[in-house]
Image (cartoon, rainbow, N blue to C red; front, side):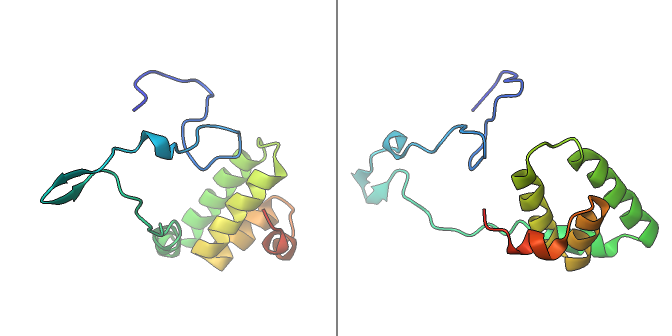
Length: 118
């Protein structure tokens, strides 16, 4: 666990900046007790979009407008088109209107965004 301020250093995985990668060699070796203990690979699927979409749909039209404007202002500062594309795709998965509105606010074509592979 990181306990100091790493500044702009990336401290999460997966990332787009050649940051840290999981090291399976650091896993704890299982110990025979009554069964096994230790770190075992766990296959799980994280849902990053359902709650975001549910929240977006709870917003009033005015709240949605302010959210889109805030996201637009933040994403205009991002140089990487790949990151913008990935962000818009996640918003679109949460709610198609949400992703489409962010793309439009950035003058991007949502169909081109959705067809881009990264």
